[in-house]
Length: 282
Image 1: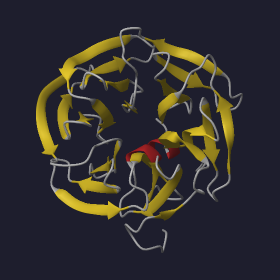
Image 2 (image 1 turned 45 degrees about the vertical axis):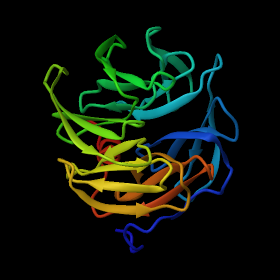
Image 3 (image 1 turned 180 degrees about the vertical axis):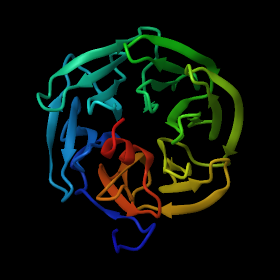
C-alpha cells in the first residue's frame, strides 16, 4: 500500500502534454493509464506507471475520443463523440474497429460498463442544455434508455452492478437508478444537487462511494452511495474532466485536468471499482 498522504493531489504528468480535450482516463490490468488527446487531437495516449507518455493509437476518420472503459476481455471501448460511435481497440495489435454507431446521438460522451460487459453512455446536447442515456449491449446494439434530461455527462455503475449513477453538468444534479438484471433503468432518485460550478466524470470505489469531478472548482468530491458529502479533494488545476483508479492496489485516483492539460493523482483508502475489474476480469 502506498505511504503517500491520503487525498493530497500532486502532478502525475507534465503540463500541456495533452490537449485541452484531455478526458476519459482508464487503466489496464498492467497499470498503464490511457486518456484521449495526447499531444494532439484524434489520439489516445498511454502513460506508464512511472509517468512516461506516448501516443498509443491514432483514431481514424476524424474521430475524437471521450470516455474510455475496458471490457472483461481487456478490449478498450472508446466513446467517439464526433462520429457518434463506440470504437473498440484491440490492445495487442492496436487495431481500431467500429463497435456501435447511432446517428440519433448528439454524441456519446462518457461511458460506463456493467459486470457483464453492457455499456451505458451519456449523451449531452450542450447547446440545448438537454441530454439522454443510451445502452449498448454486448453485440453493439444501441437502445435509448431516457431522453429529456439535463446535460448528461458523468456516468457509473455500482460495484454490485445493481444501480447506475448519471449526472447533469449544467443542472449540477446526480441521479441514481436501480439497474435490473436485464439492464433496464428503474426508480430514478435524486442523490445530490450542487449550487455552483459544474459536474463531469464520476467513478465508484469498491465500497460504492462515488468520486465526482467538479469542473471549474478544481476539486473532486467523495460521496457516500446515497449522497452524503464525505470529503472534497483540492486539485492544482480547475477544469477537471474525469477520473479513474489505478496504481499497484487500485487506490490511486488519476484525474484529467483540461486547463493544465495533464493528469493529477491522489491516493485513497478504498480500491476503485474500475481497477478491480481490470485486474480481476470476469
